[in-house]
Amino acid sequence: MKHQITGRTLRFTFNNDQWNEHAAKWPIKEVIFFKNAIVLRVEPPPGSNENENVYAIGMDGHIIWRVHKRHYVYPDSPYTKIGKEGNKLLLFNWDGFNLVVDTSIWKEIGSCYQK
Image (tube, rainbow, N blue to C red; front, side):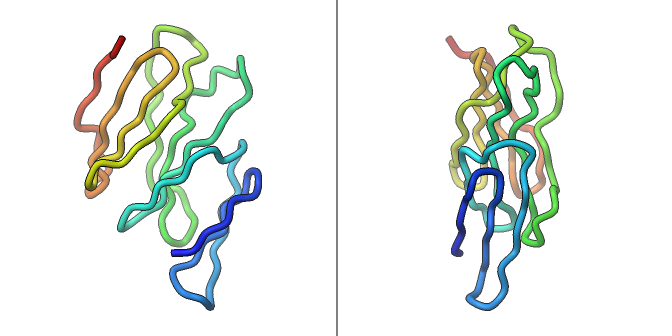
């Protein structure tokens, strides 16, 4: 897969003749590729309390999953890092909340607070 990130825009292709494009609401900071989707972590402006800043798009560029809204320790607690372990998506947010998502079914399968 080839991809390019320019600010808020992700361009990607699975072959050399067809590019797809996805425009995010905020600047794209991290991208992780899975078999059936691309996961993006975007960076909302500080103080916006927009904590649902990780989502997955399908190969056509449309959103197929987004992290759910929940109560955090601090109102402004966006996710600051994402990772991949097999078919699992790992999310880490500002206030120490960690989340694990099974990307084969797009379900949250674990969560905890870490010091």
